[in-house]
Amino acid sequence: MFEIINAFLYCGLFYYLFLKGANRLVLFVISIWAVSAVLGIFYTKMDIYKYRSNDLEELQLLPFFYLFVCFVLCVRPLIKLSNLNIPIKCNTRLLDYCGILFTILSVPFFIECVYQLVDFAISGRFLLLGANYDDLANGDADALITFSSFGRKASAILSWSKVVTPILFFINLQRTNSNKYVTIGLFLAAVSPALSNITIGSKTQLVVFLIYFISLYLFFSKSLGEGIKSKVKKLITGIGAVSLAMVISLSIGRYVLGGHYSNNDTSDFLYKYSSESMYNFNQNAYHEENTLLGSYTAFPLLKNIGVLDTNIENARDYNGPRIHCNPVIFYGLIGDLVIDFGLVGAFLILLLLSLPLSRIRFDSDVSLSKMILYCLY
Image (cartoon, rainbow, N blue to C red; front, top):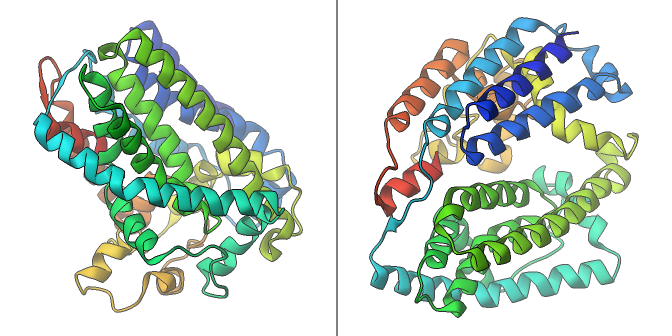
């Protein structure tokens, strides 16, 4: 019953904002959570959920309400957006120089990534990437795909720039005199971190890129010409199809070939990956009594400034003994913040992030810095 109420909350929010004429960007974001909540109804009927629930708290309604309120707080800045037909103010000379730099970095790296992934696919070893992921994360194996010295440096720079490069790509599409080769280079720079992540058997950056890219398209679409919009729609369709095939392949690799998952039904991951974070939060993170004060959500940052004296590879071993929650499973953004700062602390952090951004208006030309800040959020 609680899972049905949970689905009703997100579907009801989507329907209400749809009737109010909300922008397509916020409707897209809410639809992701609504689909997750609906699939959660089926997830609770599966053996994999019933088995894991034996060691967790009973499913309750209050955690779902808390999660929903925090989610509404998160999307409040998107709800406030009224005008999405926005030209972004940017120094065109700087944009051209950045585009050329990213093109020089991304083209060789993209070719290197694609060559190795195609080689794995043709040789029938692609599933091994997914199976290798858990061993690699635990330090028990080496990466199956390694890059050249240039590739490693390019991968690091493009990964650091992954919020900015898709924005620059769409700004270039807005321009009438943009260089098409630089535009292609910016797209390759935007997608390269996802490809790099796939080479270690992870799907995270691919899913993040796809959602981010679609969101930016919805943000920019009214300011793009019809011909450009048609091409971008085809590009998104192609990326989506390839992404779905890769996600399914990597997931099957982890379930079928990976020792940690070998006893599971290969169909479980469809519901598990789409729905489990809400239930992990409800039955686990919501009841966490200890707090990690940032080491769960910001481990690399705390490591780099010297607060933590252990490597990122040991994050699970470092955080695990300090909390009752399982440090391996997914809790979602809100769940991670709760584990770090408690129920009150997480709510206050989201409030402090959401309210200032809700005051930003996109009624005229928008600076690139403001756009980057908004997209980073």
